[in-house]
Length: 316
Image (tube, rainbow, N blue to C red; front, top):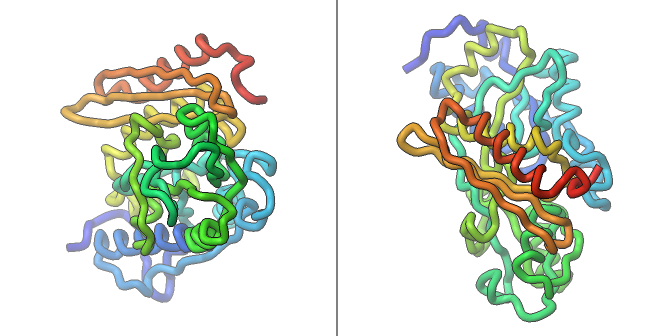
């Protein structure tokens, strides 16, 4: 049943333009967004047009993400397209989105969150704790590298980027014995790989991992009304805590940190941690409170960790 909104007249002749990166996962997320909009408003697929926009993070594949600019690598070009009115909304993996958006843009909805856990992938061993002494693992994530080394300082870590197929080929070729990917991405891609989910008390996920966000121009109320039925309040509340934590610590691709908020019975439980890049130091904080205080809980946890680590703990 279509939902009545004050939305613009979206038709096959005047389609809503959905901006996305061109990776298989990004396209899967854009297709999910389109499917939810079709269901919410009773519109045909032809009332939406998916516009693929290449981002810096996609274009540069031969260098670590931490060397080429931090947050914004996978969002900047999409935001430029919003300002230029080449697209009406941008669909993002929320863990790629900067905590402070450009003036004139707003994050207007979050879809229901997928599995937040990291997954261990290896054609050779069953799980992380089965890795042999001195094994080589591959990851482009400073967080995963630091967390892996905190648990297993004997491991060697090499840079590892690319889609699921590329990473699996590298594993088969012996570049590394194992790697990590987000469970959410594997599920959204229906990836035909064997993966072992890692409990969050072993590897706390990245802030906003598993969440899809929809960004639009701040004053475009008709578009906001069209997108509003897609917002999942539980996901948005959880991300309020997590992104407040990240913002307070000036989180970027150079800062190994993790954060997860869980919601139940109207209460938020937030866990956060900061690490040295080599895993030699790891500090954690936990907060619990009313869901209405989500952002304050994340901020308070961040202040505790900054006091413990000191400003010198964090990369500039």
